[in-house]
Image (tube, rainbow, N blue to C red; front, side):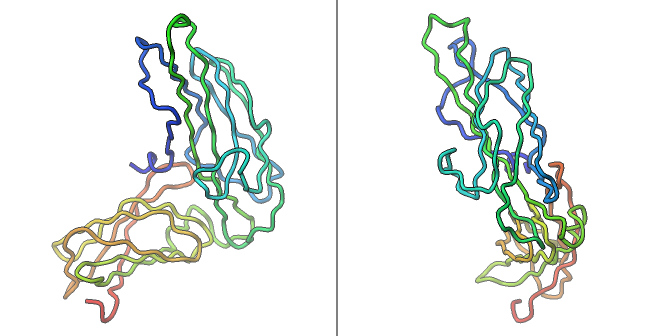
Length: 252
């Protein structure tokens, strides 16, 4: 599922969340599966909500692509205020996200990653028992979107083109993104006559191309292939588009 790949939870200390063993299982959420930072904005507000019956401590930072980053090694040009805070049960907390002004391309998006680390409180009902504390790290894509990008994010998928050709003994689909926006691609399928094969894609950077191996048979001889692929929009919804596919000459 696309939203799962967009929201990867990393369990820092493994534990089973069950009341009978006294584990703490907190749930602080932030709306959306991604953050879009308007290049014209002075700052952006992020809203957190604690759905638990107990308080939690939250730590927030932004990195430039290092999945193992910490608040001390975070290198992205964003300031989070407050970077660490306590959030009471059934309450909310607003965090300010400020771009610090690094010289980034103005004709395309840049991608960073917003990290949140949730440290729940111990369960008072089991104060006299051993408890295992679970910390949850959530990592969301953060897109810096300058105002000077041509076109619109809502129509960026229309600027995708696809081609297919032989690679060794199987087929390979190549996608080209001529837009200035990142496009988060998911599962795709290509139909060649009566045969349909599948492939798994991933995020495609602006003005770039990438390719993926096809699983299954898709004979190119005499066929006019068509392709369907799922992608994730600004709101985290999974959508699907259909495209014509160019068969690469000499690759059949």
